[in-house]
Each structure stands twice: as C-alpha cells, then as structure tokens.
Image (cartoon, rainbow, N blue to C red):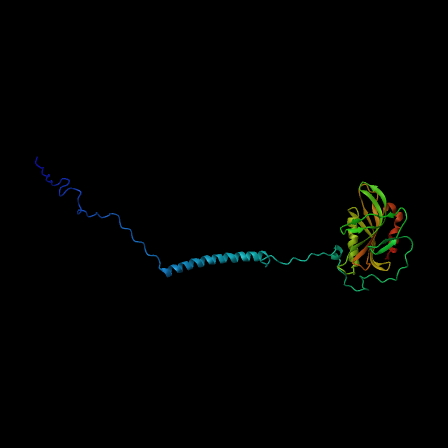
Length: 296
C-alpha cells in the first residue's frame, strides 16, 4: 500500500496561512491591556525622617509635661501650698477645762482682781470635816447630817465630790433629794503653776452648778458674788437662790453656796453647800460652813 500525501492547506481555513485569530507574530506575547503600576515613590531620606521623628517625640513630651504640671498645680492648690499634705497639726490642748477657760492671771496682788489680805484666822473649834485632797477642813454637824460616802462626778466639769455630809430631804419619782455640804479638788492651773484666776474659775464653777446640778430651766437670785478670803486663803464665793419646778418634787427652790479656794496648788478646792426650801431651818449652815474653812 502506498503512503498518502498530506493535505494541502486551504486559504482562509483554520490552520491556513491566514486563519482567523492570528493577528500577532508567531510566539510574540500580546500586550497586557492593563496600565502598568507606578513604582512606589521613594521615602524621605535619612535626615528628613529623623527630623520628623524628633518633631513627633517633642510634641508627645510637651503634652506629658503639660499634664504633669497641671496635676502638680492641682495637688499644691488642694493642700494649701503643701504638695505632700504634711502641714504640722496644731498641738492638742491637754490642759484641764478650767485651765483652758481661765488662764493664769497677769494682775499683781493688790489690784481689784486679787483677793484682799487677811489676818490669820483663829484656830478651828469643834468637830471638823477634813478633805486632804482639797487641802481644807470645815465645820461638821450632827444629825440629821451624815457622812457622805460616795463619789459624785458632777456637772460638765466633772467635779469629784468625795468628802462631806448630807441628808435626804425627800424621795420622789426622780429619786432622792439632798441637803449637802461637799468638797473636792479640781485641776484649775496650767502644768505646775499654782496661780489661779479666782474670779474666772469661780464663775465657771457656779455656771456649771446651775446648769448641771439642778432641774432646768431655773432662775437665779444672786446674794453674794465676790473675791474674798476664807480661813486666810484667797477665794471666790457665790451665794444664790435657785428656783425651779420638777414633777413630783416638793422643793421649788434651794439656797446654795459655792466657794473656789486657792490652796497654793495646781488644783483648786471647791466647797458646795445646798439647802432645799423644804428645810429652811438649815439655811444658816451655808454662811457657817463658809466662815469655818481652814487650810490643812
């Protein structure tokens, strides 16, 4: 069998020399219709980059500094000029209340505020009540008076009455009511000072007696109010009658005497005498006890 001849290409057919679709040279790639991307622009050079970094760092540092200054000013102004709040606190006043209210006097003896001089009193006679803490003694009475055996911390000043005499004048719904002759020692001077402003201390004690020892409200009728001497000792003496009303209480007034006595100590001697109007037969006791005071 003989080999067949290859077919002759036909013009205009696929595979012919001018077949359709062959518009470029053989094996030459066609051009990409998309535009070519532009190459990236070069960044700033080294010095320019460092300059920009410095500007950024400087701005951040400025903001931080401004915020710090604002906080510091707020702290300073909030602590009255002391940024650490370490202002020294004022020292606590540890003096007793009477010493705080009545500083030591600055007047010299012989002025209007000083107790007048007095001759030595005659020796005491008869039965005596002795109060070693207060530094005084005074007249002692028989029945119905009996020895005081309690501690009565009275009033705002908390005067600690431990020594004296008393008797119960009536019993009512509020308890027992007493006639009394009581004494105590109360701190009244600064530290180791022994000089007292007798008028100031005396008025403070009398005000405390009226406010803390009696029914409220009450009214006062002054009888005696002066700087004097008791048993040769400088003293402030007040005598007065207080009027009041208390449910169930028969007594409606009371004669009272209060003496603050300078015994040459940082403590003052306090002597308090009270006689209810239900027992006026004992009113004389107020003046007698005051006149009977002697130092011990």
